[in-house]
Image (cartoon, rainbow, N blue to C red; front, top):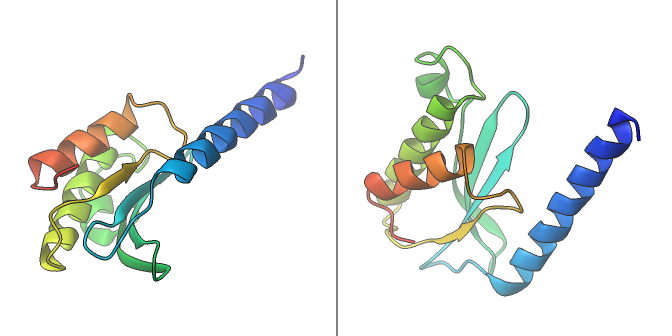
Length: 125
């Protein structure tokens, strides 16, 4: 098997896991869904109200307050910073409880660092 085939299979497997997870969880206005997307260069996080199909708050490693402090925007430190930033934005919106959506990614590394940082900053999930 060549490398393109392996990468494609990994991506398809992640999308399948994501669909399976999304069947079980749903965000509301009182308890929005914390959705994660990790690209090779950046980390994106959103708080989503699935009932009204609106994004309540969003943060990423592209935000100026995170990007200026970090050497790499796709690192573990960037994930921690994004977790803290999304927790602050959630608190400003009056939200404390959320539903965590790991988007098919395994719960380790950047995903775990982001979740732990958000918990430490005051979010409950």
